[in-house]
Image (cartoon, rainbow, N blue to C red; front, side):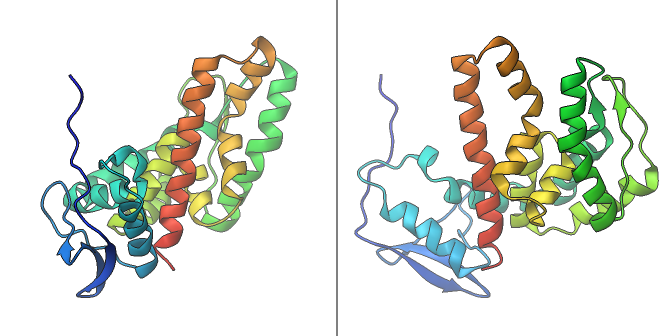
Length: 236
């Protein structure tokens, strides 16, 4: 049995003003989230991107190809109702940040991690006032509680929409530092993604690429780049 999907019924999707924000109307009918809340976003740029997704619908609505709409829905229906919990979950990545756990061998991998990961930890020290400890191997290392408090406060300061983007940047990369670096333009987004995939790239070089793994990595990379684009549209 084929999966049912709503068909396009509108001629045009347009941006409307809703209070201090912006919404999307389909032939004058306001778009709502899956939870039936108004689909209202903070910037016209983001609303225009969402309207573009609705205008691009050919026949059936497919949320999989409407990432801006999906992220806005998540911010409104989910994050807005559990902001503190989501922020705490993101901040917890600082306790076990990817950049802090280093290989012990081979030496080539040890050096590559140092070359690519140390500069980001140095950036966090300078830009965020946080110095995270590194450790060889995978055994947990206790980070400075004061440093974690700084990171936690910075995460909690994001609004619902920015927190939605930060969640994906951090969860996909496995690093709170990389996620914050993306939001603060410490490196370009594709480079930050590559840095987060250093270990996987090493394994592929050593043993050869796995088609299924490469396909999944491409999906995650697209989601990472989208999260940064969504974040950027919040300030335009």
